[in-house]
Image (cartoon, rainbow, N blue to C red; front, top):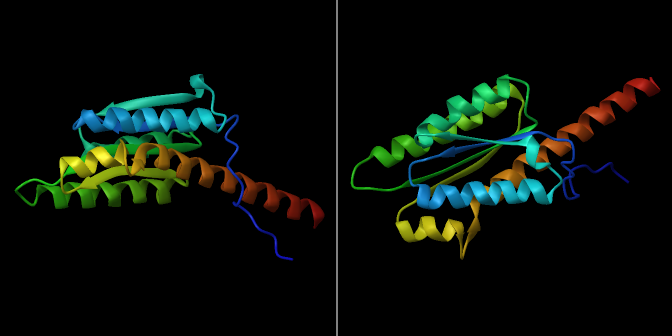
Length: 166
């Protein structure tokens, strides 16, 4: 029987988490942030171990998330924002570069980054994804970050156990 990791619900007790949230489109991002906070609490993160950082827009999220990760103070970071398509190509640049930046911050630091950036064509789509009929992408981002953080803890524990047996 193979060893299987990451199938259980993450236990985030004792973890410290950050949420980096965009002020722009706050009619959506406040709900995304609240979803992330609620999910962190549901998985055992204490209120005093949850820090929320508000940035002007989605484009600024990767820089702040990267700096927070580099600080060594956080086990997981949820990035939440909302980019809604307009009449110009601005949407494509902001959405694409924000996604790339968050991915790079996570890969460079080794700190799990949950991607809770809504990229919607309409306000209705953003509404549906920020606690409406499609769910809450902020909650999903926090869950993903906690899940990976818990899995990484299992990996480190498994590696330590294997070293002790050698």
